[in-house]
Image (cartoon, rainbow, N blue to C red; front, side):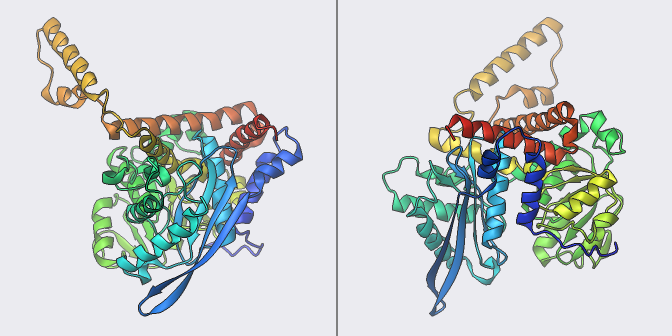
Length: 474
């Protein structure tokens, strides 16, 4: 383990501010504009009571709106005991910068409820969520054209379905009520590919990195993703899908998985679905019969590997362990997994950090697609899929006539059908992640003094937000 760094560890919010200031120093903008972008516009704190188990329980929730340079504002709702005002303000700021970087037309927001969802059964959680929704919806802090939540830590499709239904009951004549929240189940207005979206976006971010040989060489690596050793911290929704796609589709080796109760190490590669099934059945890694179980999970962050993907909590890599990190590439699948203290140490070591505001933008990107789907009231692919299929089959028929040889049935089955909603969602997400990566690289090429990918990401984002504010006459 690394020797403890005694410098005061910056909070998550302070870390975001430090990284903002580093990028803002490169902007040729007045201090007033920079300050306007930096500060959170508003935060609403609510305390409400719900009668449960024969007594009244009071809950505290927050909804922060960081920037309204574009509306609606967008950001998840998390259920965790750690939720506090500083955290939601920092997360709302990250949402603003993230949306700007990947050119999704939303401002940034974030919400949370200080609750341990495991302490309550499903019926109780539903009652709490519906009351929480009422408190925010009556103030337009949940609204299709003003503030659109999504899942986050401790929430998922189930909670979004409750929120959507509660909003519709409050606004029965709003034809666009379904667009008040994203991350819903498909049968009530959700979109194919939303559950996997953030993990899929992490995969596309890693692919984008490895398609640029200059960046790979800079990290001291060579070749593509295939065979690369990857350590994943956190096998929740994001970590699971990222690990699954990178191993099954790109040929990477997931050599370690870190969870709350320890870690599993297997240099030959971990079967992610098998491990996930074990966690679901037993509540943790303990007792898994393959690989080597290590009780001290955080120590495995220092395991030798090619790519480290922290996909769990803020501050997992900090001033206390950053010096011992051996991974040449870190992909921030979680929000704020690397503190500002650790970021400085890692940059000095030459570690390439693919920042959170880019790497985990898949969720908000596909949420944008879902929001558009809800407003247009039509499933993506419905109008053109069969026409594409007819054209493809006609092309295959002509190729077979010209060559006098039949095309392989599996080829025709794979490429003959038109694109359905999932195909289009993945295509749109892939394009978004490639384009955003190209923006960061271009910024680094034109302004080498930016120095690293995180600063470049912030710079691109802040430049666009500043332009928006000037256009608004601010």
